[in-house]
Length: 266
Image 1 (cartoon, one colour):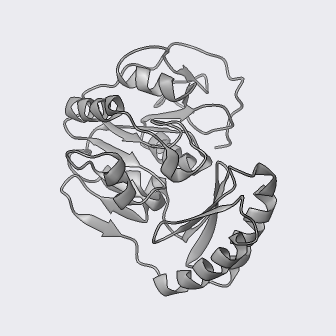
Image 2 (spheres, one colour; image 1 turned 90 degrees about the horizontal axis):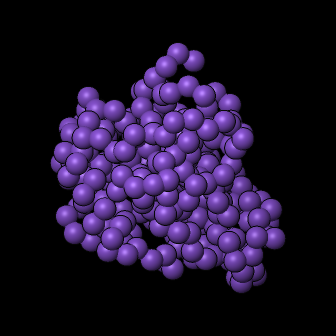
Image 3 (cartoon, one colour; image 1 turned 180 degrees about the vertical axis):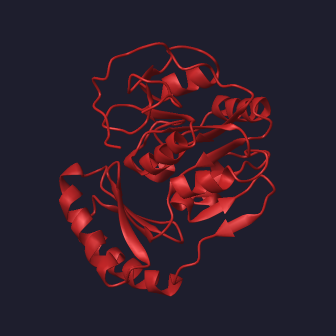
């Protein structure tokens, strides 16, 4: 299904989070504002409290679905460990605490790690984030270098074989293992307790989240895009404060990207 434009007509708002939901949330740009560098984001205690409250409401069926690693996510969200999917689904921790990691030839990534490290030494405005199983080249500090960054990552990927792929995001280009995305992670969570049998809901802001929206749409759930831009999501929230307000049953309510309600014929 093709992404829809921003000008889709508004209608009635999406209901507040409900006890029968399985709630999946992106982090950067969804629950917290984007920052110039990945380690510069700030998560206040209110966000952590809101996550725990939503987890209680849904009987534990809440998971973060992020491009960050599981280690980073645990550091950013201290307290009782949450179910998590990290590095776009390459690694996942279920509600039972069991870790799942997508197998890939990790030694090949060392070649790209070296070549990209040498590359950014020539361009101080670029930042290489090493997530362990993936590499992210950020150009947020120098948006004019977007094309250069993309070409560098794609060139590095070519030498690694079909087990790796390139993924574009908000002012970032990532080199990651192929065959895994946020949609795969959500689908796997939905086969496990306590997510099984619930209505899936996914909130995200980036192109990488479209994989999750597609799975949630297919399962008859609620997909919610944060911010502007084409999307396959059924609903839209304006920004991070709107997401937090909606999670706490506040305002403003999201408006639909398309005219029909999720689950209706289309």
